[in-house]
Image 1 (spheres, rainbow, N blue to C red):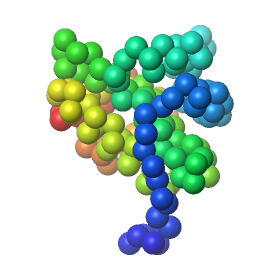
Image 2: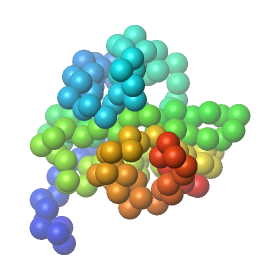
Image 3: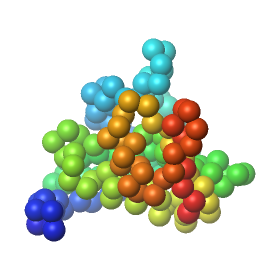
Image 4: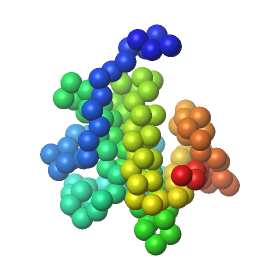
Length: 152
């Protein structure tokens, strides 16, 4: 147990594989904050397959005992050395156990290795828990659309 009395999970972090896609999509369907409008949706199976095979972007899975506990997906815009965290999701039963923070740290390390100097994410105005999470992890709030940023 850690200082807060939370049982420390044995986590393994790895790159997302094509075999993970159905479970990732299923988890996203349980997370309403994925949508930014009525027309937006989570990534399709084909989009995720292409992302896995054609990029070196941080696409990180957190596993515990062989089960996916959560994931983070980030993109890199190489010409500007910017990164965007597209999605960070944790299964409900694994939330509030530090997995999100550990996934974020793994992602930031990978971004830094790829010469990213600035990273941002978009968060729904009403998603107070996520806003507090990113603030606690060093991001600064931007203008009206809740733009969060952090230098690496």
